[in-house]
Length: 76
Length: 221
Image (cartoon, rainbow over all chains, first blue to last red; front, side, top):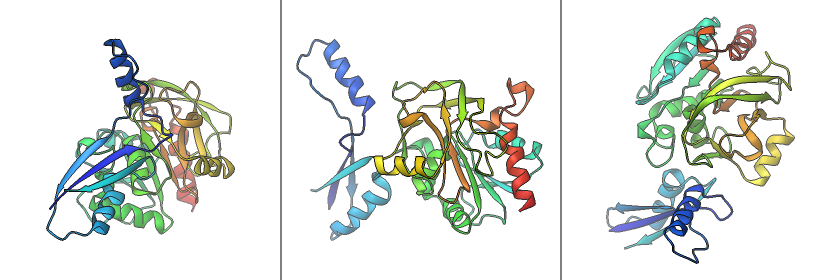
């Protein structure tokens, strides 16, 4: 089985990289880009039957820093 | 005083740290990250540089290394620990210090000497200074933008655990925070490098008081 983990900075945590991308899109002439948030996508190939709880532990112990980031798991 | 300096693949301030500790009078052992057992020491120093390519997040992989379990156990027994730069990032990733270090607000790597305010002298690390002193230490980091939630920030201030603040905030850190202490005041994490300000050849010696103070406190303990 495969799982895809999306890691994003929590709402309210300033994302300077997202702000730089937003600025660059504006410089290219794209109008109306009101906000950009940049995150990470991590794909995991897992043994069949790996529980959602185990995947959540992987996220909370390593893949995301729960102080500043939140995560979302997509089981594919 | 006996001190251990942890060496990760990518550490580059480990020898500077050892020199600074030895100059202050410590007996220093270098410890490779794969060693599961930490020698019996009073202080563990986690140096600056990089660790494991800083993949995922700075310090995240290092925090899972065998030696870091030893560092956590050392601190839980009441041992002292000093984390500088990447070492500060590692200590936040292990949970020994609260908060996190994000990409600098200006997105650029910053390498320069900065002025710091000593906020508290109430710790073994800062007792060689007086609160309100200003010191000059070099910084060299890309991810030194300290952040913590409002509740954690209020605790740090309320418990007098902010050790150093920047005079002119270079990286966007919340409330200009450059270094913080643990609840028991025996763990200090800071982005600026006191070990690079201990010799006239460094261009300044403001860091000497930190190492001498530490030696004085731990040798008498």
